[in-house]
Image (spheres, rainbow, N blue to C red):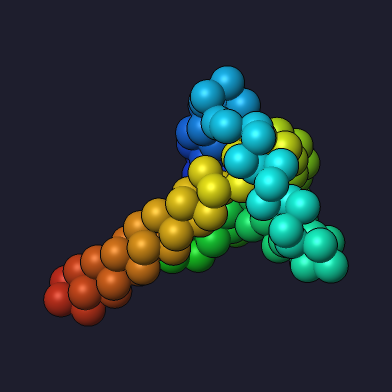
Length: 125
């Protein structure tokens, strides 16, 4: 297995638990009110959240400087599972998804900075 596949498996494990928790505990009425207010922007919201759910493992691999293995059935399957999990979260609690996206961006930035600082200070001679 390639290391990018481990990143994908770790992501889908975490994201599946997040989706199940959101599905069970999110307030569907508040989510429905948000969806009704979105109106014309609904398609963009669905598209962006779907892409974010599918591309999260690739984002984490990139921030950790892990080469992405393109011809992996595992990575492709987890991308599809990420789309399904995103739709589960979207159907019940979009606010949960927005908070997860914010946390992912902040975590990715911290990993990226840490990786570049550590690699910049280590000599490979």
